[in-house]
Length: 180
Image 1 (cartoon, rainbow, N blue to C red):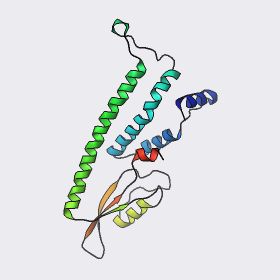
Image 2 (image 1 turned 45 degrees about the horizontal axis):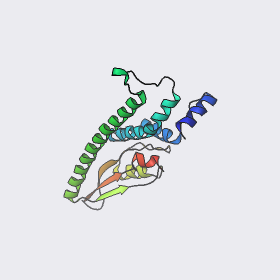
Image 3 (image 1 turned 60 degrees about the vertical axis):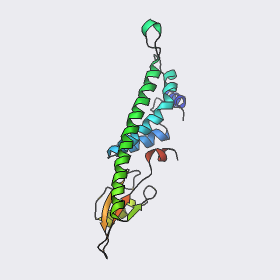
């Protein structure tokens, strides 16, 4: 749904209108707990916002040229667009730092030779329930969508052996889920 369509629907109905992507972002935003998940949501929101900035400027009265030296001002939409690009660069740097840290932890686990088991699956497929049973944890689980958003890792002792395995519960990247 385009910004113009949303704007026209809101004017016709006098009710706020959101599209599918905005709804998913709002759900993720309300459920995110880790710093990395929150950064991923912020990045996805900026990517969602960027194509809409220019269209929203056309629909918003008063988004005219800002005065500048010698009458050579810039449009407020250009300022907003530049600010979003700056925010995106900052968030990408933070996510790269988090990725490097996660990679270091992964390398340390590989060095110990500990096997890794990942629980992957669709939303509400029982990953967290199985994780809780195996690790004797109490991670929040629910039949509502997107309750578990961040990766969780625990060491798990196998009952019949003294060996341990690393157990992951994972979801796809937030941005990937938006484009399905």
